[in-house]
Amino acid sequence: MRIEERLYTLRYKRDEQPHLMVKDQELCKRCNEEYGSPCIGVCPANVYSFVKDRLVVSYENCVECGACKIVCPFNNIIWKYPRYGLGIALRYG
Image 1 (cartoon, rainbow, N blue to C red):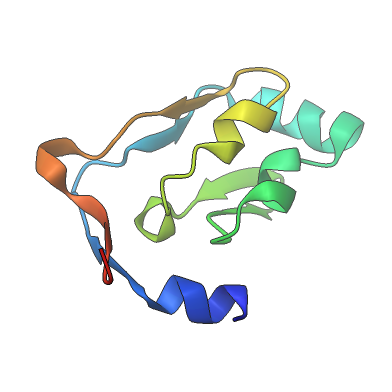
Image 2: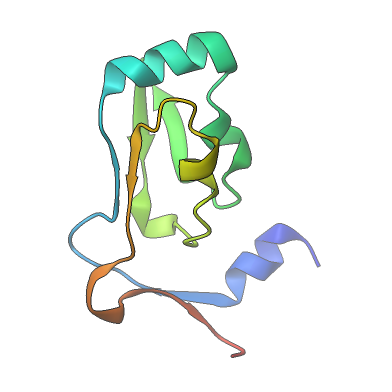
C-alpha cells in the first residue's frame, strides 16, 4: 500500500489552534543551508515546506508521528498533541 493510500485511511479533526509551531524562522534558514531541512524530508504528510525563505507549517495535515521534532537539529519545533482529543484518528482502530 502506498503512503498516500495509508494517509487516506486517517481521519483528522482540526483544532483551531496549531499544535506545531516554529520557534525561530532564522534558525530554519540556517538549518536549510547546513542540513537541507530534515523536517521536510522526514515528514510523511508533507506538513513542512519552504516558501520564500520561510518554513511554512501546515499543521492540519500532521499525522502526529513526532519525527519532525526528533530530527530538528536546533530543537526549533514546538510539538504537542492537539487539544481535547482533536487531531488524528485511525479509521480502522
